[in-house]
Image (cartoon, rainbow, N blue to C red; front, top):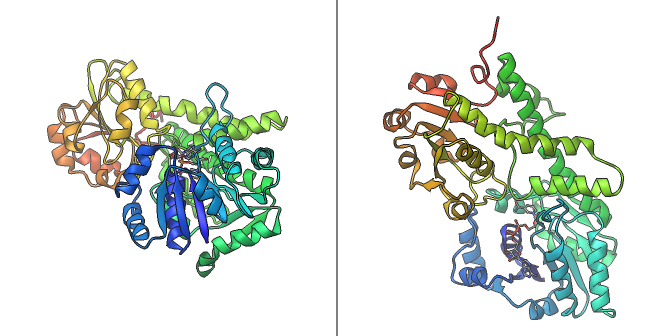
Length: 442
Ligand code: NAD
């Protein structure tokens, strides 16, 4: 099938290359000429494991191309995926639909023959109706249907998530469009990926409900971790103890510095706003948003406590800046709030990340950047592990201790065993484990 994908970011690029890999003929469009030039020169504008090879392979096979001009591509496509950004609108937290609506207008101007317009971007419930109205106004005689097909991939595992999804959600009210969508995803029948066909509004809400639920799970275990610290319990054991219960499940039960990234923060907030507008406040999600916001800054205070109550004039080394490993995405990363909190308290912050330095630099004024973990820790008064990159899981602790000014290690991802770290002479603090909280009275 001939497909177009509008927006070649984390989702659009992965969608485009994976659909091409299924055998479809795909053109990815982006309005950013630098991004398209890079892609055409074989350079990836984002870091995602396996992406570069898959793009090269599909370009070489003639199934995948990158362009900036949308019109001719839309005119030839049987389905057009909208995969542009839907960030938080500045000031009020609603999802900003500017890019989606601009894309809808541009599509409307170029439609030829029956075309399925697929919103892959995460959009508030009812946005499919808006896209339909925009296109209809611009092209009153056009033959098209608007479908919601939200994306559930995780950055860092995006290609395998796209190719082996837990489910494919298709919100569609038009049988012809449903047939097109089933044909697009037919190669996944082999993997027995369930295709859930539902109403468009239901599909739009399903995406937000999924993200809000996962954000709630993370926030829940983070609060339990706080309680563990106060009562001398171990959150890792609690998480395992509840996670093995099939009704609960063990994923998203890792205590840490709070969720970040390009999706959970903006999507939870947008859901809260949509619900308030409909006078059905989602109080649980509202609380999750508030608890998570305060947690990121609280992690800076945790570091300060671990440093003996003050970081003024001290050098704090941060290992890992991206919101999670295996991505270069810095959007809403906890590292940003932690670095600012430490700088506000008078610390000099030095940082290292395996893939995120380029994106981090403009977002972290006043921070010094190091070329590797050890250069970052050299002479530091404390090392904070913020993101659990594999490269930080097996640091040479003896070497680390030897090069630091004072051996204070704060592990916000619990990737070390407290005993191991203490045996190497570190004053070690983690999240929600015995010894991490205030000293207990009997
Ligand atoms: P992104 O910012 O990485 O990419 C968006 C791209 O769209 C940019 O390259 C931008 O230049 C381009 N663009 C904007 N308007 C355009 C237009 N009119 N024509 C052509 N290109 C245009 O965003 P992303 O992280 O890929 O997210 C896209 C959507 O997918 C969002 O709604 C997001 O919530 C959702 N989503 C993201 C993830 C994720 O892990 N990043 C996962 C699931 C869903």
